[in-house]
Length: 171
Image (cartoon, rainbow, N blue to C red):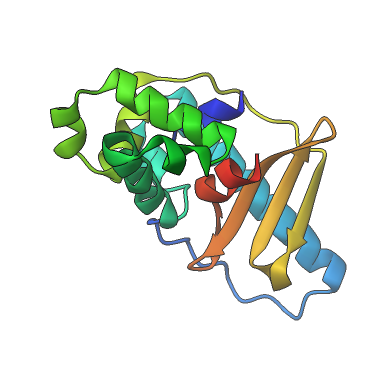
């Protein structure tokens, strides 16, 4: 199920909320939780709709560079280089080698790989989030479901985005 989420930065500007009076820590926490829930739901909806344009709005800007790094490793990575990666990265690199010809990989980039994966369709379903843990002074969030960490998010340009590179490395 996580591969679904992985094969898929935040480019869309968030609509500005009207200025509110100073919020209590509890109010702020609830607001963050709602924003994270909305980001997760937006990403899952985009996956379910096979909508690359919508999906790219919900991922970090580092996603496309990361996918490009995987593309380069699929083209030129040695056994030693692959063995330095985690299992999920190795699977993703080998899948690129199987699905694409060398010429196709040479003439594409990370963003196109991401968009192609979304358009091809993958399993996705709404998540019932058990817990959200905001870390790194409010810049990162971990989402837990059924007792397992299932998503990593990062705050970019004032909104929460799915951090696919962190998710792959964290698996």
